[in-house]
Length: 291
Image 1: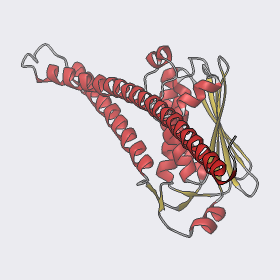
Image 2: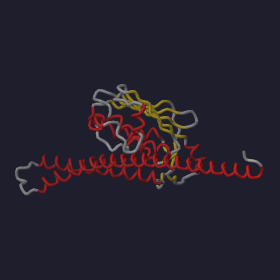
Image 3: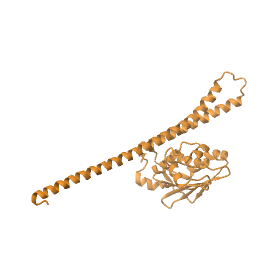
């Protein structure tokens, strides 16, 4: 049995030794946990990178192959047997492919700027109903080609919003064209704009398309996300439309929400604050930087 000062010293020494051993054990445990987390993060990053390369390889190669193939045909010397209608058809296919390629590149540049915080917006007063009408007229040909009914309804007097009209139109194009793309022939896409009291405007984009589960909605809102292989083959895309649309809404001080049921359809709800609220928060005629 230890007594006196020697006993106290021995007990303190043992306590210090046990404390050191416990600290080292905790440190080793934390190190293993950190290494495991880093390994999982690296694997996820590698998977995302692989998905990105795969998606972009397809989205870039498809229009490029069209451009190269039909331009090569136009460059061939044997033009006598080719009718003017065929020449116009080939040139149209090249132009469409080039436009699709440019759209993919612009989407990649947009999402890159948003993620790096270098994205800016004009700050002007906008009549959102006029922007919606103009956008839907632009998309009417796509809806007709897909055999989908496209409707616009306005409920009450809409307060003006403040922001970048070009980018708001881009947001609407991404959402509505996505709704048309995933709605089968005979279906419908309806856009409803209504006043949200004195706070702003709410825009609902409803479709009778294939719908999504909650997990699929989360994937669709992730940059370069594809809901599943079969659906991405049925309707091609980069997986950037909805993420860019949500980012643009949030940059305008608004909010975007998606409710969807597989086999029944999807509703995207967009809230944009009124112009006077945005002006009070950010100042008149300024430029907004990415958040």
